[in-house]
Length: 119
Image (tube, rainbow, N blue to C red; front, side, top):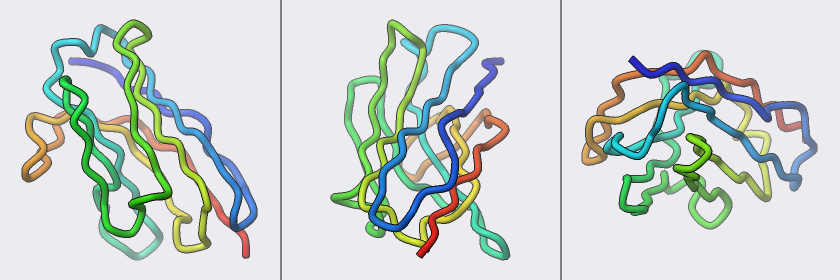
């Protein structure tokens, strides 16, 4: 079972940027897909972005054009570049390995990293 560790969260003003990283404990080359989820207080966890091992990406409508997911197989790391952040992006962000992307089926989770966007 792969261990995932997220980092890069923090407090940022609206309009700012953050880059989240998800480091895996072993090679992610053979993992079908990876994804980023988020969970705001009182809300269900929702998928933000996914990326397949072929590089195909999908995004939630709410983040399209602002967030970019990428993966570096050599570093066993997946990234989420978040630009033009809004207060409604405030949440705990989780990285996950996915069995499939349509619909996304997570199999392993990281511990999460807090992102707070102030207005």
